[in-house]
Image 1 (cartoon, helix red, strand yellow):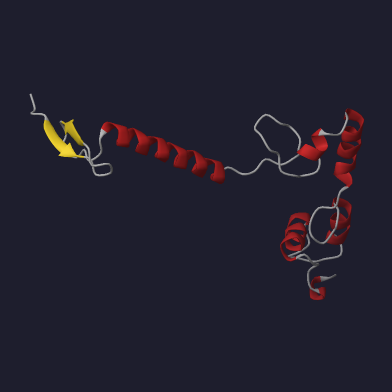
Image 2: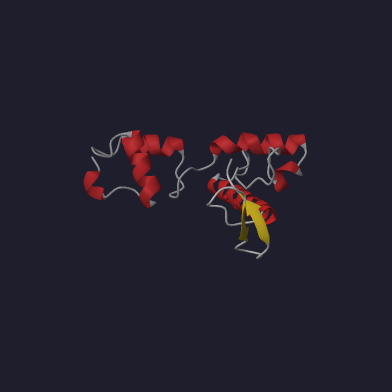
Length: 136
């Protein structure tokens, strides 16, 4: 059986009894430190998680169990349905072009911008149409 040894706590200076050589904190200081580390871990996990967005307006959602943002949750059911119906017609991308416009533009451009995906990604990344030299 190992001998019990005494040591002074690094944080508070109280004398405590220990068995292992590496121990540097007394029981109370080590519990306090564990609680601090748990808080830090929870904050870090929350920072790494992406913010949830409202499916109607795209605003941030506060709380885990909520489905809509503060503004959209204050609306009644009919108003919410009207906003949901308006959603598919919204413009996607910084150039303000919708799906139909991008599909029509793909027929006007030659490779490498002759496909929907490449043209859409170019418009999304740059915010403008490809150079005129790629037009058919």
